[in-house]
Length: 454
Image (cartoon, rainbow, N blue to C red; front, top):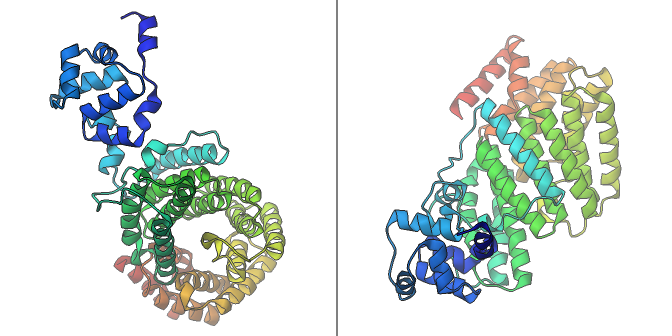
C-alpha cells in the first residue's frame, strides 16, 4: 500500500471514541465494531484491506464469528488505527486506568516532584482552555469493579449524586476524611459510569458538574488521609469535568484544593501557582467569595516564601473581596468559606512568616482567637487546625499557659477525627513544645504518641 492510499484509508480517531464503539472494543466484539464502521461509510473491502483479512473472513466476522487469537487482534487494532489499550491487547495508560493498576499510594518525594509538575501543567492547560477534553477517559473506572449503572439517566439520578456529595462533605468537615474517603471513592467508581448512559444535553451538563464536585471531594478526602497520588488523580479529573461543564467557580475551588495539597507537602512555589491559576478562574466566574478564598491562600504561600510585602497585599485584597461578596445562592463547594475561615487563614498566614514581626504574631493570635470562637461541632477538623496554630502563636508571644491549654485541646480533639492532616499540622507545635520543659514537654510527647497511633 503506498503512502497516498494509506492516507486515504485512514479512519478518523474520533470513530473509536463513540460510547457504543468503545464498549464493543472493550468486549472485543468485532461484529459490532465492523457494523459501526459500515455505518460511517467504511466498506467490507476497506476493512479487509486495512486489517489484512480476506473478504470472506470479514464477512464471517459480520455474521458473528469471534476472533480470539491475540496476534490477529493486534493486527486488526493496528490496521484500523485503534489504540491497543481500547481492546485490552496492550498495557498502555488507558488499560492501566481501566484496570486500576496505578496504585493510589503516597509517592516518594523525588517521584512526587514529577507528579506535581505534570499536574500543574495539566491544570494550567485545562484552566486556560488549551487542553483537549479527555472525554474518552472520564467514564473509565479509577478503582475496582462496581455495580451496573442504568442505561438512561435523568435529573433524579444527578440529584442523588449531589445529595450524597453534600452528606459526605458534612462527614468530612466533622469527622475527617478517613470517615468517608472510601465511601466517596466507591461512589465515584459507580457514578462515573453514568457518562455512558443516555440522557439529554441539560442533564449531561449537570451530571458532569456533579461528578466534578464528587471527584473534588474524593481528592480532598484522599489528601486528608495522606493518599496524595490518589488526590492528584481525582483533582485532575474534577478540573477537566468542571471546565467541560463551564463552571469556573468549581474549577477555581478545585485549583484551590490542589494548592492546599502542595502547600501541605512543602511545595510552596507550586502551591502558589495553583492558587494563581485558581484566581483566574475565580475572577472569570464573578464570585468574590471564591476570589477572597484564593487570595488569602495565596498570602499563606507568600508567607511561607517569606515575602511579607506580597503576603500583606494578598491579605488586603482577600478582605476587600470578602466584604463585597454576595453570599446568596453560594455553590456547595464554597459555602464553608465564611468569616471564621477568613480569620483562620489570616491568622495562620501571619504566623507562617519565617521572621514574623511582633505585630504579625499579635495579629495571628487575634485572628485565630476569633476563628476558634466561631467554630461549632460541624467544623471539628477546622477547629483543631486553628487551636494548633493558636497554641504555637501563644507560645511565640510568650503566653505559655494559654499555649499549653490550646495545645491540649487540639490534641484531645485530634484523637476524635480520622485525619492524617491534623496530626501533620501539629508538627510545629510538637517541635516548639519539645524545646520547653514540664507540661509542654509532656504535650510534645502526646503529639508524638498521636502520630504513632495514626
